[in-house]
Image (cartoon, rainbow, N blue to C red; front, side, top):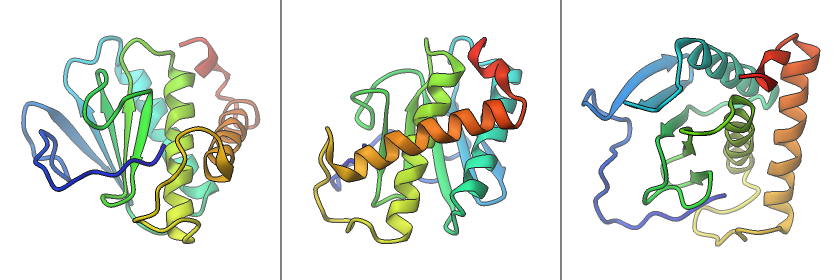
Length: 162
């Protein structure tokens, strides 16, 4: 869900620096930051995540750069499983202890907020409902569609097993 970040300092910078905290990979218009030490984050899962992100960028026809950060657990950005920070145009996803399909669903949900921001469905200073409301409902629905399209139509059914 979209969150508002105040001007206080946080431990993550945008884009992340080349510190011990994140490895950063450039994917065309996407920066993917992965917090070090996420249990179960194998190279195969990272490859699938990159493929899914590229797929979503194309399916949603995103024009602006996207920043996605995978975190071990909750922190000032994540109180549930994921969040979107409109002021930074960044997505934060809790990755540790979750099935890959759930991580991808969170990524698809938050990237839908990127598209909503691009087409000005909501204003950056607007408070967005955390539960319900059409912005969240659309992101939930799109995430489900993106997952099924990626898995079933493109032969990536393994996401349900990892």
